[in-house]
Image (cartoon, rainbow, N blue to C red; front, side, top):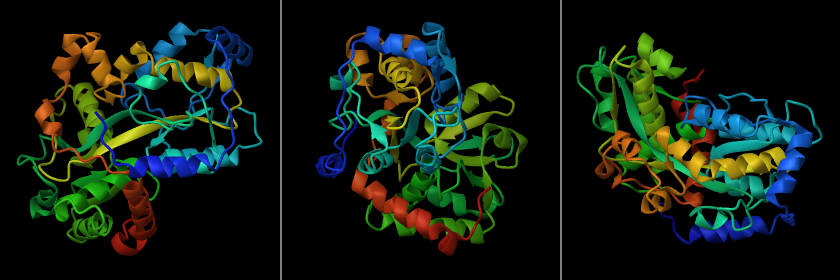
Length: 366
């Protein structure tokens, strides 16, 4: 499912040298008892309309009713999540996050800074993309797409270059701030890949130049696009993960009609990783959460939210994926061109985009 070069392993190995944390062996009974004593779980950045998180959280609560869910800042970007851990290192209060859900490149970076607690879930061996010591796991992926309000946009854009056309004036928005949101940062990279015919090294700068052109043309709307802004018409076209766009399509239910377009080029796959904070106030509840989202039930929860989960191939082979779920997924051929950037490529892009957005594009996203 996921495809990366050996560079990932070298980077991960280097990151492991930065921490001497050890995994403490615990039975599930011990973890459950510990979680009961803690009584609370504080995840951060899990919007209910993202990748099925709403139903997954509900399923976790139903299975472990003795845990109170304390959901922190559901709209936080990956960089915000990392800062939340740093800001609460000595804090055991309710504002300190127990777990994060971040863009893949933030996994090794957070590990190198000693921000994540190593823990190997029971299905650890079945997870393709992960830190060997369990500091983080790649839980799901999607591809960047165009979510389009068909009432307002008659000619659907089919590729990144189409977004520059005059007919899309004041129409195109990102689904996050490209200075802090992994989704938006990778959207810039995807546009650059399209412009450079897949040149990973040149893509970050090319992506920034693309959005400068988009902004200069008056097509870029500097607000964070959401389902509500698509429906209201303030952002008729939003660049976002396919699973979010598909969920919006279902939620809006034809009012207005929404089309989800996977672009012809620059098809970028993004893997999101989950990790437990090294300073988690509720470490046992956090471990129980990780066990749940990597169980069959949790993984199918991702799939119901249109995300391809880490254990997707295994679940299909074992006949555990209901056909009605498979029927709702986009055709597999749309994903054949998907590019999975290496961690080094993502890190280079992160630095280029977050550091260059203001000077190159100059559009203050709010």
